[in-house]
Length: 482
Ligand code: FAD
Image (cartoon, rainbow, N blue to C red):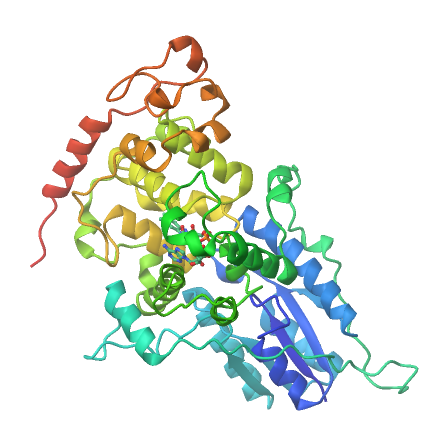
């Protein structure tokens, strides 16, 4: 006998329920990763996610080898691949940790049923969330659509900060020398053969910025606790400051769990219930909320949660979309944000809201254009959080700000990047522009910069005031519900 542990986005050894349960069975444990991105269509992982996955699998494979185990890599289709591995290893059980994307849920349910039909023990576990989406319900039994009561309900249900222990050793299949005739380790693809890294090497900026893997995740958490956690509530909105945790890609790939984060906050003497860590834990709460919404309203990956927006007159403009993607809109805070994304695979939350607002409101382009670009370029691209973030900003999602509250990116820049540090970091054309004009290099509300100082920087592609009026007008013309 043996237990297959099918690893997906739970790429860690500590607080790893499926792995621990397998170890506790006592039989040999065979950890396996099956590469089958087409099974997640239409949201199969993008290029930046694949970059992360490659490195995370490499680190996990090393960590497993240090414990006498081995990571088996295979290509899908998943069901057939797991069946082959069951045959090859004599496994009588398959364990995994749950995911919550609609296409993945459909696939996993089918795999669970089919494997059980063939007499295997199949179990799935929660490794990713404090509370699974179906555990939190409003008084009427319906899912929540507003964050605050959802989070209150989570708090009342209890926030567990007790991670599971990491197994010390993983029982390995017997070697041929130890037991002739016994099933040995099954064969594995090489990591390079999965083709996760880009052929054109655009990933140098990602290499410089990130350390994928479980150890990298804990280092990042430790740095945050040491340097920023106490000041999080003051710094978290300033994209030019290292004030947030940057744990999002680590959380997405399951290199660290929310339970471990809660525990670390408590161990560091930061009270997540009421003290300085509360605003940070609340953001972890938004991640939980995003999963709750995705699970209960799976259509929202493509369609608005608020049906009123189905008739919204979106614009199409290839030229504007490209300017936005390339960070050449002529609006400094937007361009800095989009270039941060391109160079590092990540963007600050404040910046995400600003660029999403410009695209969906001032440029009136469908939020899916933005969501798809983020999907390909973010190392933390996550269907739950990305869908929530885009629908929220577009005004069509849960708990969205009222439509008429349209961000003015110039005012946002002046408020959240007052000295222009962030803009200068990513928009070298504006390096010499003084702070007083950095968000309005061509004039407008603020002072215009000496044109010689902003050479090569384009004029704004859109008039902010007129486009705001046009967006409000388009919204007003939408049929009202009922
Ligand atoms: P911190 O401020 O340190 O927060 C800690 C953790 O809480 C984060 O790592 C993240 O897991 C979670 N979190 C924080 N804010 C949010 C939020 N608003 N919604 C959900 N979870 C949150 N986040 C993603 O992880 N993947 C995405 O694809 C994604 N797309 C987004 C798209 C848009 C348009 C917007 C407005 C937001 C999006 N977010 C997404 C949410 C948020 O911007 C990032 O989670 C955050 O910037 C990550 O940085 P951090 O780890 O330093 O966050």
